[in-house]
Length: 269
Image (cartoon, rainbow, N blue to C red; front, side, top):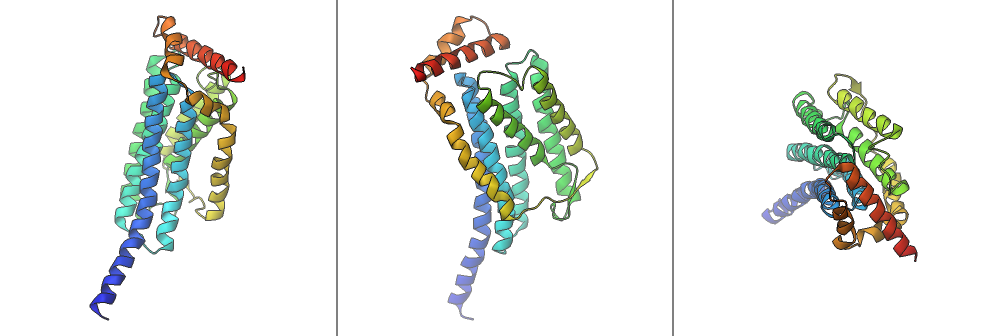
């Protein structure tokens, strides 16, 4: 084998590693984008942006399920990729949903609870992934010890997205009977993440990811009103919030709902 042929083989081997790494980094990007969108929702007083934050987490979930498949198809699995995937999981499925939940709970009555519950998500995610790195040399290929971190993040993202689409002017995940179920299940999943229960490895075949991709695409049509609200200027919301003259979370929620209703009436007229 000539030197030129060896050089071509090295290039091919590098691309087999680069492509799945790019998929993993794409998941990292959407996890980070979710955090930025959540910050913007809080800064602008625009709850509609929380639906976008949830969508970014769901996109990260899809990409996280695909990167391992891509690496195996291309025969480009590496220890580096496995380690990188762990850090991506912590940001996209630990920090991002915790930030989303924190901003949602701003409308709730308890500052203590809106700090403790998101913090518990971050702590349990860090502990779960640290144990995963130490005790699972197969990296989940033979099943999991403790509930995977992606399950809790999926629950938070899907619930937040559905609530924002169906009840954009309400806070059903913050107060009321639905919020009790929503937050209770978060606590249950946090506990299961730290347990020693064994869970089978979920399917990673592409046919199971196709519905998720199609569902993500179809949600664009369902968010037409949300996108319209996202184009607002800060002045549309902030004067109404300042008019209350209070930083009380309930006042903030009422002002936000009133601004959303006024904007919708303006669009229809």
